[in-house]
Image (cartoon, rainbow, N blue to C red; front, side):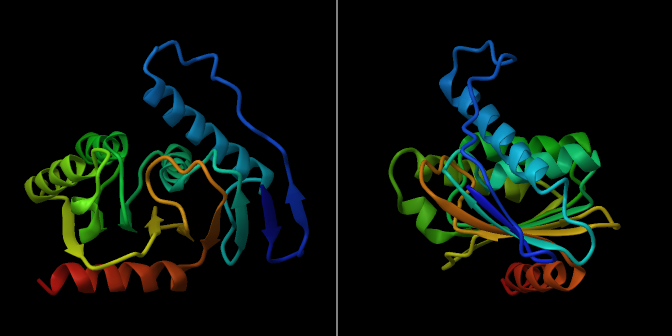
Length: 205
């Protein structure tokens, strides 16, 4: 994977591939993979010397070990509380669906605005049932704005009222066993742009 810092134009390349976590005692392979994706995202952030500072952005190329959900988890754990998450994705797996709504319930996430592709309901490999689970949870939650749309967007913006992070790229909130690219920025203008179009879609029902 490679990381480019927009301020210095320096590049960081690593062959890092996370080993099986010593803390993962469960035999559930899906849970182990999820933990490793978070660890891979954390390693990328560490290569960046922490989350972007205000005005910074990084271009990241991954080797398929991390995904968009892993970056959210790292940000959430760094902040403790995410004030708002504005999310658009093509597909999302059940682990991340459960995690997001658990975060809303526990207070780790205060507001979720979610645009999901209408294609997810038509896909195999469990995506259709997961779509129905997502839709049910979103409709039942007073802390979630939700819209199904003809969308292929893959981006999220989140904030803690101090930092305004946007992660945009090719990866979904699911397993991505292939090369993926991401742009990670701390810029209120970028954050607000994505928040605004997501909210516009949600409110245009």
